[in-house]
Length: 237
Image 1 (tube, rainbow, N blue to C red):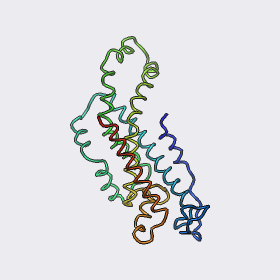
Image 2 (cartoon, rainbow, N blue to C red):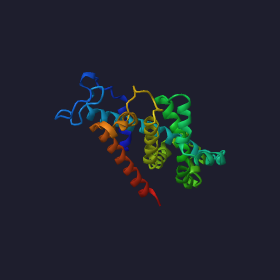
Image 3 (cartoon, one colour):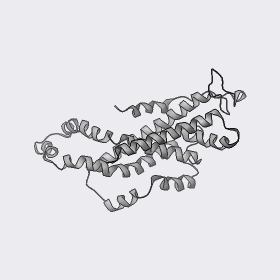
Image 4 (cartoon, one colour):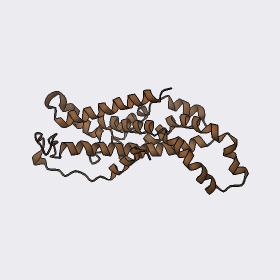
């Protein structure tokens, strides 16, 4: 099991306690990054926001891979239209929509991102599956009259392994989509903390009265960007 699915538990985390009278406190031994404007422990909030964003990315990537798997196992329908849609980055669909409706709620954002990511994931997943789905082993169960339960028991672990190989790309795509929208102020409301919301609140302060939380959140996102770039170079043929 991929470690990315563990972050699904981050969506269940309770909100951190608020104490406005302790807002923007200086760093101390108990609070290494101080507190944010609402008095929340900045280090805990950074971990909390990261877990929420990673959990959202895991949820969205899982849904995107499931949709891509269903499409990959079926007949290629409207291949030209899907190819044209894949040429457009997902954010170019989400940005005008989010601006039009004044932000996207958590669940609709995840569903839309999953649909757009599934378009991108379908070609490489189909390329992985077709050598087997077009071969004699795939048709053997049908020829021998096996039930769908038997076929699912035989092929599900194999299909899961093929799909899981694309999880890192799907996960990073979902993470950056959410972070970018929230950084621009077009994501869910402030009741759903995340790295994008954290950057949206802290980045404007870095040029004047930058806080340790702002710098830490920026460095975390930059580190994730470097990891993303290294992963793409590793996956490149």
